[in-house]
Image (tube, rainbow, N blue to C red; front, side, top):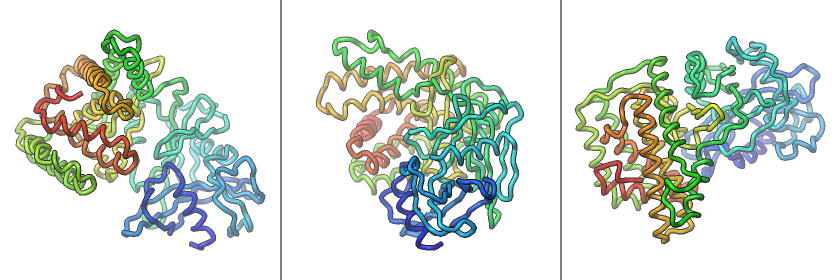
Length: 465
């Protein structure tokens, strides 16, 4: 790869919020361009391209940056300009991140709707997709590791920026749940798959139902918390913005999705050996986290006791494909109820691990931690306000209980009865949060550290908000 191309791309990728290597030195090395999706003389010339990012320690990631090539500078795309250079076949060109350009992204939508096949790229469409979708794209300004394009009010194309060889679990799970007509997810319309030299295959994007009028669960929960804090003399169940009824409905929706996933994607039973492996993985993550955040060290012995209890657990545990990274930000409240989104699993985990069965209790524990987070975020600016701290615990406990009650009504089993699993999965999640906040939002680090302190001194998950 020439320096004329690699340096501008390096500078552009390093500034994007979807880039996962922030804070690390890297080089842009291998380039994998696919065939042109635009006509021969059309401008912009457009194609999908993959780039290898190599870090100083030798590790590497693969990123997708579809590119739009113009003969002249485009003022309306100045924010998406990557650089200008001589490109074989085109000559001197101005190059832009094509996802900002609706003239280029029309080819992605039409490719899926027409089930196009070109060398190295396959566009797939489910049979019952409305083929009348014909609207320009709009890149949504959301903070996430992917890029989302809205086509009118009908369809949303999620483009995977960081590409992992293999089939993306978000597509696999959405396809199964769409075919089962599950009401608690957005319908899948289609997807794009790439194959390139060396026998590599990866999913690049997925087209799904656009829930335009929905509000994410994190936003709704924070509104409820703010309402509670504004009414200093009222309890959580007395405030107009009480969230408990929604938490109850969200618990029921989560249980319903779990049931469909177990039915459609298969279920296994874990025994003692699998739980020992799980406990060892949690211990390893804790040890690594202590190296990164030394404050964890004072709690590590008590946390390891929780993992020891899991390793000694002798009951059979149900396991199947799960969401894997469930929290309030992965949910949408629509006029027709709650929807769960983004079934990719925890981004930090290897793809192979995200495809493995896991206990549905992991998803429950993730949501319980999310209620804790929502209640505690406003405490960051008021760390010594005991009244707000009391209200935060009360709000979290009320909504944690409501979620579990809704889950139990739908599934027939209360997840709180699996106290060993709840405690260990919550602990594992809190350890992850400590590392994440130390690297990304140091001012928020007290939130997971407070949870760690409570989990370390408590034998009962109900005692933690």
